[in-house]
Length: 66
Image (cartoon, rainbow, N blue to C red; front, side, top):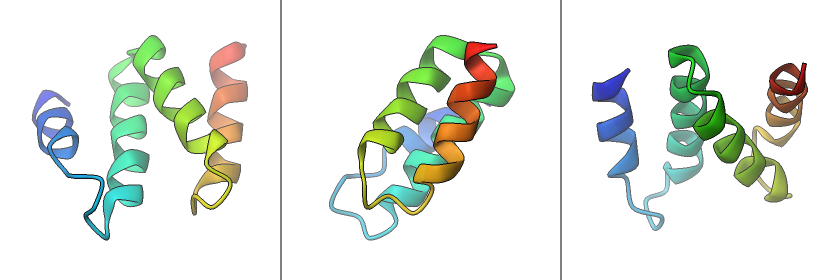
């Protein structure tokens, strides 16, 4: 998880795959058990109305609130 976190965090916002990096970073935090970082990342995705994983981010946010 640490290697994935480091690699995904280095992807610049102007990269055409940035939205995918955001998504996989959120999943990395979630499955590593870092609920605080996962929640922050999923919230960032959810607030972006054009993000391709907005709906899925909402589902993960609900899981994190339980």
